[in-house]
Image 1 (spheres, rainbow, N blue to C red):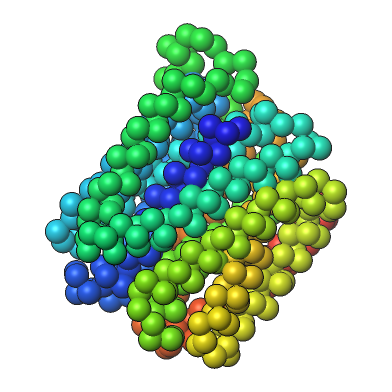
Image 2: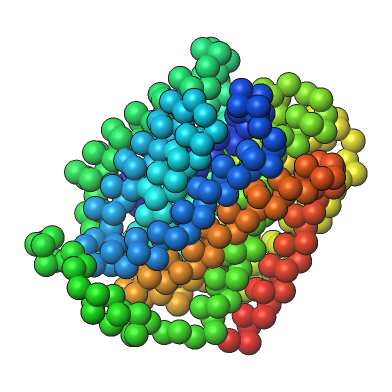
Length: 386
């Protein structure tokens, strides 16, 4: 679990490597905020497309190989972004990073699900989520800190890319498969379309799958937009420098980490669907407050800590609910399907809210995310019928 949590931390760190420097990218490449949002959208579109194949392959050849390869490819994408000299080159780097990033959640979450029983799934998902929250929170702090020292966002991205490659080697050498996979890799590689067709045929295509995908999509829209535009929101709304804007972003992600470790055990104690609906409702209320709150430093720090705490609280609840439905013979595929919904949401969020920002105002665009909180609460409650 420790090895998986660290891998999750690095994965999430890389996934938010660009948002903390979007104001700098907008200036250096002379692009709009909508175009900057499109960089994140491209990453998550590719991420979504490759998740299902990654989940199927992880079930066949083992999680260790898929996780290690994906982490290296994600690091390569970040390195290519650091070397990009055109907007098109930045887009290409996000394609590479998206392919690498797509491998993590289907393999990582299914590995956690395989390791844990139903009555400990929430606690395990909370621990796993804490790793991701720490990685996400460290991104603006570490990247911003390196930029302050070196005055170069390019050097910052290059340096953090090396860390991922090193840990991928460590992970591959230390991680033991959670299930009884065959030692001979040659026998596990998916080489025939018939194997995949059989797995798709045997998969339980029930209404709860649609519900899980829908909830993942709606939360993905919120998180994708929040991670991409929180720094920009503070920068534009309060006229503060980028370093303070990233501090607010960091505090939001600290809130995410705190809530993630607390909510896991609660998900084992209460109805997960009711709990998920509640977290969406409270998140929506807090998002609406961003449209009216005075741009005071203390108020911004406090509100965004609460937003992070509530928005990310939904993640372990959702994953624990998915884990209850998962079985070892299709756990990778189930998480791949649900997380494809999440990745699609992450791709939609930055693009849609980037357009809203360009055509209206940040004080309107940011609280508009509350619409998806309401829809998410309805989707969670609707699942009680399945």
